[in-house]
Length: 180
Image 1 (cartoon, rainbow, N blue to C red):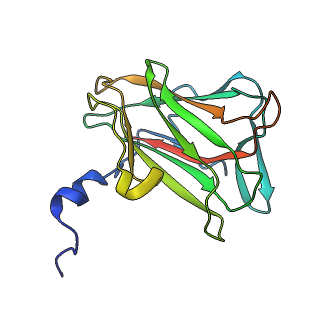
Image 2 (image 1 turned 30 degrees about the vertical axis):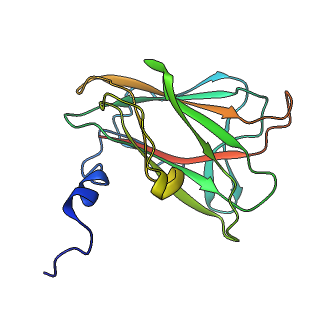
Image 3 (image 1 turned 120 degrees about the vertical axis):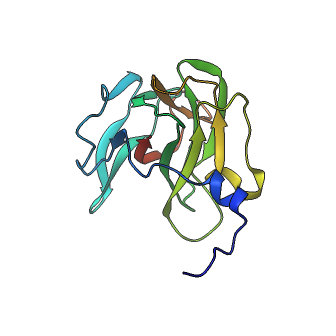
C-alpha cells in the first residue's frame, strides 16, 4: 500500500477509538455497555431530530444547561465529541470539561462562516496531564486534556455557553460521543 502523506507524529494525534468502550449515538445505535448513560444535570437538553433523520442532543437554553455523558476510559484514553457546526446566526457555543477536572475546559463554537452545516469532531485526550488546543485545526482537532487515570470512569460535561442573557443562547447540538 502507498505510504501516508502525513508525518507519523501527526497521524498518531488522531488515532482514536478503533474499539469503542462507550458510544452514545442519538440514532439509538449506542454501544451496549453505555457505562451509566446520559444525564440532564441542569437546564434543558432534548434528544430529537431538528431535521429529518438528523437527531442529536440539542439545547437552546437556558444559560448553563448541562448534559453529562458517563464514559469508560481505556489504556490510552481518547474521547471524540461530534457536534454540529453551521452558518446560521442562531448557533451557540458550549463549554466542555470533565466533572473530575472542572477547571480544565475548552469552549467550542457551533457557528462558522462556511456556508455548510456539518458534524465536526473534538478529539480529547483525557489522560494527558495538561490543557492544550491545536490552534492549527481550530476546535476540530485535539482539544482537551484533564490528567484522568486510564481504565476509569469519567463524566464529560457539555454546558451551554456564550449566552447573551438567561434565555438567549443559540442552538448547540451534540451528534455523538465515543470513548476508548
